[in-house]
Image (cartoon, rainbow, N blue to C red; front, top):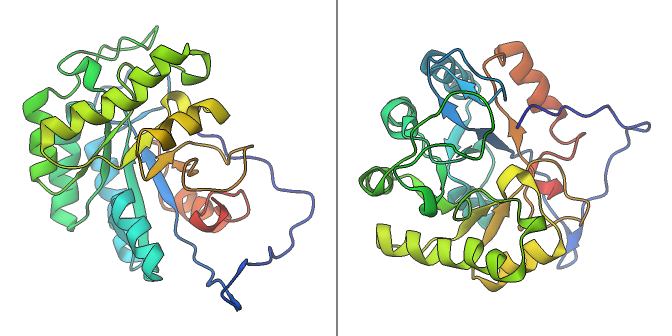
Amino acid sequence: MVADISAAPRVAEPVPQPVVGGRRRRDSAAWVAMYHSVSTDPDDPYNVTVTPARLERQLAWLAGRGLRGVSVRELLAARDRGTERGLVGLTFDDGYTDFVTEALPVLRRRGFTATVFVLPGLLGGTNVWEPTGPRKPLLDEDGVRGAAAAGMEVASHGMTHLDLTRAPDEVLHREVAESRHRLAALIGDDVVGFCYPYGYHDVRAVDAVRRAGYRYACAIAPSPLGRGDFALPRIHMGQADGSLRLELKRRLARVYGRSLEAA
C-alpha cells in the first residue's frame, strides 16, 4: 500500500502504438490516481492517507493543468470514444467513511467525480485487515448510497479485503461475484468496476472478475499478465505528493507503464 515508483528502464524507446482498422491508435496520456483515506490523523504506517488540505491542493494542481478528475467508468467510456484527453481517473480504495465526509466535498467543489471501491462484507465496520495503525470506520449502507447519489461511481473491492490469489475457489467466487450483486442491490444500479485487494491478482482472479460480469478491474503496478482493462495500473497518491512530485509522476506515467494506453 505504498508508492512504488519503479526504476527507469535501461532503454527508453518510443513504444509502437497498435494499429486498429488500418490506423495507428491515438496516443493518450490518461492515467489513474490511487487514493485511500482522507484524514488529518497523522498515524499512517502504510502511507495511504492524505489530508483534506493536501487533496484540495492536488486536485487544484490537476485543474490548473486543464485536467479533470473522473471515475474510472467515465474515463474508460471516454477512451472508447477517443475523447479521454484531459481526463484523469480518480480512485479511492477501501470505502472509508472519510470518502463521504472529507473527500466528497473537495471533489464536488472542483466538479470532479471519482470511483470508490467498497467492501460490502464490512459495511459499517473498520479496516480490520491492517495489522497495525489506526482503526478507521468504513462506509455503511447510507454512506454508500450517499456516494452514489452524489454522482460518484461505487465499485467493488471484494467482500472483505482478502488476497484473492490465495483464496479457495468458493471464497474467490463469493468475494468477487457476491460483492457485485450486493452493491448493485444497495445502490440500485449496475456495478461495473472491481479493484484487487492489495493489488494482488493472477490468472484465476482475473478470470473470476471477468466471469462475474465486471467491465474493468484496477490493480496497482503494471500486470505481468499483459495489457488489458482487467488489470489497470494506477499511480499512488500520498501526503508527500506536492506539485513537483505530481509533475514527475505525470511525466513518467508512460515510462513506468502507468498510463492508460499501457494497460
